[in-house]
Amino acid sequence: MRLRFIMGEVWTGLRRNSTMALSVVLVTFVSLTFVGAAALTQMQVQQLKDAWYGKVEVSIFLCPENSLFEQCAGGAVTTVQEDEIRAVLEEGSVSDLVDEVYYETREEVFENIVAADSTGVYSQLDAADLGPVFRVKLADPEQFQVVADATSGLAGVEEVKDQREVFDQLFTFLNAATFVAAGLAAVMMLAAVLLITTTIRLSALSRRRETTIMRMVGSSKSLIQMPFMLEGAVAATAGAVLAIGGLWLGTRYLVEDWLTGSIAWVDYVGREDVWTVAPWLVAIAVGLAALASLVTLGRYTRA
Image (cartoon, rainbow, N blue to C red; front, side):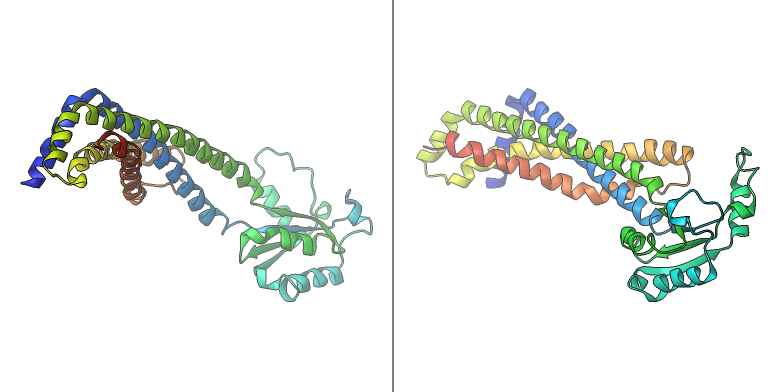
């Protein structure tokens, strides 16, 4: 009987303030869509890092003949210097950061450059113009700078490069997009709280006579306030459901169909990731409604 009464009051409140309730649904939908988009973008960044950082290598370019680098003024790298560099990588202070070390002769480096050159820019090069290279696979790619600092000053080393540089700008852009989406979400969630507060306040004012009578006949405070709390929760949850649906459709058609078809070598987030985010969006919606209820009900339903 009590449940039926509460649900009837919730329906009455939503019907009386249908315009405001719809506004709450829409604002919550937009704000939680931004929250979900920010979460999915960050998941995408982490997924790309896990996939790509594990494949990148640190390249230690050794001095060739006639190098223009000051540190190669002594001439081409010698066999002794190569052994010393390898010893630092495999037995020195950074050995625990190194997974594997590959050595490419100048002839192999030349062949790789020519094979990858489709423009003919390097057609005038000769193997003698290049130096050998150590390709280092790190146990933790984030520790590149430690390995670079330990090897860049060694005799015979011309330059140390990390292939992560290729991806850093992309990750910077994606992280910036995450922060923008999170900032917009914060603004929209504030608007949602204010709207839910206003909706509850209007509903409480419109039924002040009924709530006064309920207090006079001895109804508990929780029974009086519960319908108003549920009104905000229902509207906010409806917005969360719409946001989840929008994110699901976005990943289904924009990501899985369009982006995957255009750039197939990237491992994108998918619909299963939306279901991972979904419970958090519903929890945020209920939390927004609870916050708005705490702010409003104590004032507008008191005796």
